[in-house]
Length: 364
Ligand SMILES: Cc1cc2nc3c(=O)[nH]c(=O)nc-3n(C[C@H](O)[C@H](O)[C@H](O)COP(=O)(O)OP(=O)(O)OC[C@H]3O[C@@H](n4cnc5c(N)ncnc54)[C@H](O)[C@@H]3O)c2cc1C
Image (tube, rainbow, N blue to C red; front, side):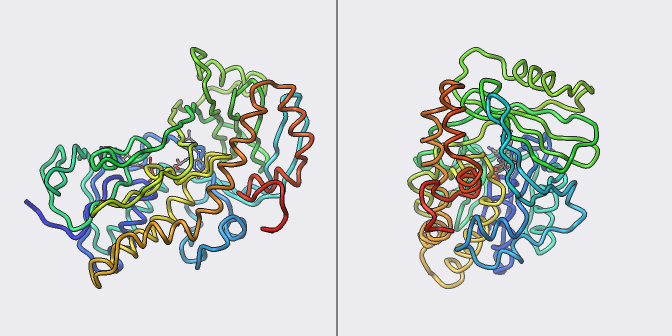
């Protein structure tokens, strides 16, 4: 059996970032990924906040410049604002710099950073279970001092050691529509996306258009999205259709057990208000990689991971969850949502987008 310091399950942003920082600490790292091609199929809106926005969203996370020093070639299109539309199409525009990426390339870029400094990657390799402390996969068994679950919201790694995963998911559908779009992200609320929202995220020569919902029973998500596309007169043939699930129940109660560490969607590390998870996955992946490095090199506790991500991001993730729970009360009917959005106004919407408590200014 091959032995590693760390075996990381999942080559998404969380797993690859953990691998990069663990490899930087000179650890012997293996990443296993069930997909044949990293980043494909794309199950994402592909939007990221610009660095200055991230500094406002996560003010206690240090050295964001180096963490998010993303090469220009990764940027598909810069955006300057988020336009929020109510059920009656009242518009609230928030200045917000961001950019879209080609997620298919972005995930490869992140995992390549880790392999370039020594991490080993095995694709087409499925995690099956942890048995007697070893990682059992479709391509053989591996032993590791530390095992990382970066395997998304259904995390088999978390289940394997009895850790609770995310309890609430928002199903999503998306497609890519060719065309030229103004550099503004649109979020449409109301019965077009019950309990969630529909988005238009501009890319170079196209837009990622999709929607996420809560509890729609039998309604087909694809037909909802087709209705939305029609309402926006987006009649070009989509380049692809895809879907996925976003964990919206906030961080799981425990992210470290024995020698197992859980990162990213598997840990519920997603902004519950908008489903954005890439920046959180990357920020927590760095913490995980560094803590694992110190644990193996110097014997410090793995539970420092739990302490550090809660110190750095717990407040923001909990504020987003609180806002989401409050919003859910109004989501049930378009008229109550319309009214709630009017009461909130752009200022409080801005706070919600930035994971700040919406009824206080103390955090500004
Ligand atoms: C429709 C949709 C739109 C979204 N839009 C945005 C957005 O615009 N911006 C944003 O910031 N976030 C967005 N998100 C959220 C974002 O995609 C996730 O938060 C982010 O990908 C989390 O990264 P991760 O590494 O934790 O998980 P993932 O990216 O899901 O990576 C997990 C990896 O683990 C692998 N894996 C799973 N099980 C196994 C196994 N048994 N064995 C081996 N490998 C396994 C998977 O194949 C995958 O590659 C969106 C999510 C969805 C579903």
